[in-house]
Image (cartoon, rainbow over all chains, first blue to last red; front, side, top):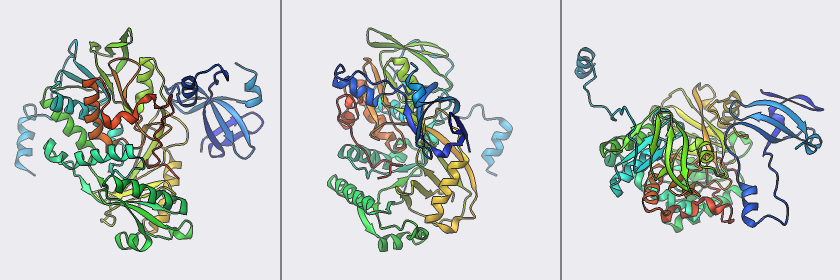
Amino acid sequence: MKQITCPHIGRRPLSEFVFGGEVRTPPKAGDASDGEWGAHVFHRDGAPGIKREWWYHGPTGTWFILRRDTRTDEFLGALDYGEARHRP
Amino acid sequence: MPFRLLKLAITGAENEPRFFDTREDLKPSYDVVIIGGGGHGLACAYYLTRDHGVTNVAVLEQGYIGGGNTGRNTTIVRSNYLTPEGVKFYDESVKLFKDLSSELDLNIFYSTRGHFTLAHTEAALRTSRWRAEVNKHYGIESEVWDRDQIAREVPELDLDCGGNTPVLGALYHAPGAVARHDAIAWGYGRGANNRGVEIHQKTRVMGLRINGGQIIGVETDRGFVATEKVISMVAGSTPRITKMAGFETPIEIHPLQACVSEPVKPFLDTIIVSSGLHIYVSQSSRGELVMGASVDPSTLHSTRSTFDFVEGLADKLLDLFPFVAGLKVTRQWAGMADMTPDFAPLMGLTPVRGFYLDAGWGTWGFKATPVSGKTMAHTAVHDRPHDLIEPFRMTRFTDYQLVGEKGAASVGF
C-alpha cells in the first residue's frame, strides 16, 4: 500500500488517512454575498495539477496539508496544520 | 469459417462499408460542435439531426469513440431514483433505451433483469420504502421486498451475509436492465453519421475562443474551427474544459473502478446492488461477473486501478456469494467520474453564451445516455434548458437549490 511521509509521525500507510478536499480560503465573513458563499462552499478548481489538500490522520487525530499531483497521485510534501497556518 | 470472411481474406476489406466515414480534414466552421465522442455526445449529435434538422455538426473526440466512460461503466439501466427530478429524467431514458435496437438498427443487447438494492439496516430499509413510494407515484415499478421474496428470486444469495450484516429486505425494480455499452455509442454514431454529422476521432480540444461572453470557436490540435454553439459532453475531463471556458463548477474527479471475473455458467439473472456493502454485481451474457464498488476516496485524474480495490470488493462479494471464492478476476479498470456534491448531473446553460454543459455524470451516466442526448440537443437548439433538465442547472449551487439524489449508485445511506 502507498505510504505517506508526514511531520511528527513519519511514514504511514494511506489507509490510515482520510481525504479532506482541496485547501480553499473562505471569503471574509460579512463581506460576501450568498452567491459568493455558495461558490466557496461548492465550487472547485477541479482541473488536474499540483494541489494543496487536507488529509486527516486517524490514529493520531492530526490534520495535515499535503501537496499532491492529481495526475499521478504522487505526494510531494506535507505540512502540519500549525505550520501551514503561518504560510500563505 | 464463413465463406464471406474467407473471400475478404483474399480480396481485402478496403471496399467494404464501414460504420463511419473517416474524415480527413475539419471544416472551417460548424453550426454545432460537440466535445466528446462517447455515448452522450453521439446521442446528442443523433437527436440534433433527427429531431431538429441540424446536420452541420462535428463531434470531436480526443481518443476513439466510446473509449472513455462509455466503455468503462457496468452497463446498468434503471430509473428507481429518489428525487422526483431524477425519477422523471431517468424514466424517460429507460423508455428510449427499450426501442433503441430497432431505432438504431443495431442490437444493443438490452436485457431486462430486475434490480435489487439490498438493505442491511433499518435506515436503509426506510430509504428503500421512501424510494419505492416516490417511484410508484411517478408510475415506475418499484417495491420493497422481504427476505422470503428475495430468497425465491435469487436463491444463490446468502441473505445472512455470513452473519455479519444480514439482509433485511430490498428495493426491487423490475425494469432494471443491462445493455451493451459499446453498441450504444456505435449505433448513435452511425445514425448521426448517416444523417451528415462528422465524427473526428483523435482530435483534442486545446482551448475555447470566447468573445464578449459568446463562444465563437474551438481550438483543436488539428486547427481552429468556428462555431457559435459548443456542447461539452466529456465526463471525466469536464474541469479541464470548464477551465478553458473560464468558470468553476462543483465537479471533482474521482476514479471509479470495476472488474470482471472469468466466465462461468449462468447463475445470476438479476442485478444485485448493496448500498451498505458498496458493491454491485450482475452476470453478463458471456457469463462473466461484472462488479463495481464506490468511487475512490480522493480525487485523481487517472484511469489507474488498484489491488486495494479488488481486495475490498472481493471481501464484500464473498459476504453475498461465498461460493464464488475460487473465481479469478480477469480484467480490472477505472474511469474518471465527475462527481457533484448532490449526486445529480450538471446540465444546460453556462455563464458563456452558446456554451452548454452536459457534465457531473459521476457514477450514473450510462443509463442517462439517450435522454441526455435528446434533452441537450433541445437545449442547444432553443438556447434554453429542456424542462426535464432544468433542475440540474449549474446555478443551483449558488442559489441553494440542490437536488440531493441519494438514489445514485455508490451512495451509502
